[in-house]
Length: 85
Image (tube, rainbow, N blue to C red):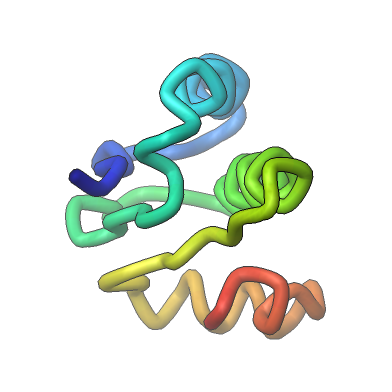
């Protein structure tokens, strides 16, 4: 079952979301972004932290249904390949 990102990911909830994901690391192999509507670059911080954890365990993250804005942000920050975008 994929980890479903919430509708909003900003500085206000990013740290809590990151912690929640790390507590459920097995579900992070697939992250579903279909609900993601209101976000800023902090979502990249969360995804990269999860990717780092998964890589340490010999796995990688798969980001599904990424909105175009997320793909653009990942490109601007140079992390598209790290997140499979």
